Image 1 (cartoon, rainbow, N blue to C red):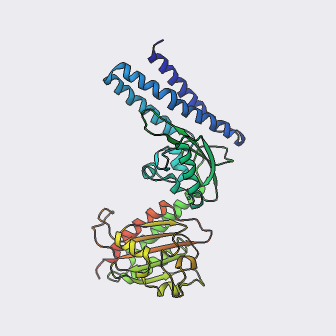
Image 2: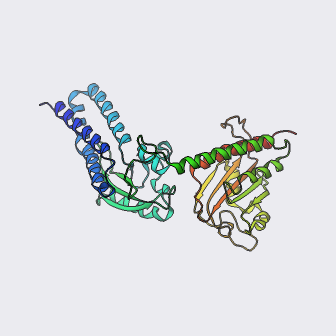
Image 3: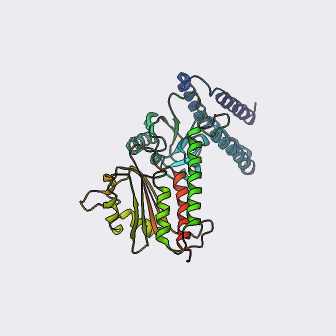
Length: 380
């Protein structure tokens, strides 16, 4: 039997075993660890046997044939990785994402293109980031596989088991870390969005609420009095307050910011926040200067939004757990935008046990902010 035939049989066996793993995803929750161990074994098999075998065939068949075979094999392995039934990510020793499969993007709520090049630890709750980085660095140094429980920013109340193992694929100069994420106690390891999984009603509800908010904002901007930016901002704050954010703070201008509107919870320090000078809010100034949005969960440092007249940090007094700070600018690349300077800053706070702002919500607010800026520029 030739090397090519032997490699073909190994590859066919691997594809068959992956199909069996996918077919067994409905195993009882108590058997999920066995399934996870088998999945890790198959991935090790790819790195330690199939990939070196491919390289030997490429060198034996010559540069042209080897290059074609390598491209075909890489395409196949990428497909297997993307369709793997468990959430899987390849990271380096600093947890920077090299590649993330579809199941992992659905679990974390982060698109693969956005995640690539960013630390996977950044998608965890702040209390888990340091420990996760330390464990990933140890695995990358060759100190053995690790396993720990982490929590994602998207679902801080749901513990997720993270299993880390080192791989040395092909011509990689350093060890990469394979991270498998698995929420414990779930019968179906497939995350939302994978074929065959029942739709997530909570996510569908949040999406519908976001569409309703966008519709309400559109109606408000179309019916706002032209030539009166202050009136536009006041009506915008009323739409967002309560249903979307516990606090809505609107500052008008760019170089010389003026606080126009503050809506907060009943009994909160709204008067103190309204009296605050926006020039004393580093986060507002940075947003106006850079014309870039900021999304923070458990904001740090606590005085990034300045202090009130008594010297207490505004974020601490307001019990802020997540915030969005968005520039009001038409945006040259925005739909219907014609470009232009920043006309203000919109700050949104959520407090207490309310869910933190998601990246999907941040994106929707970015679009609304461009439309608000256009409405502010409408002549009387």
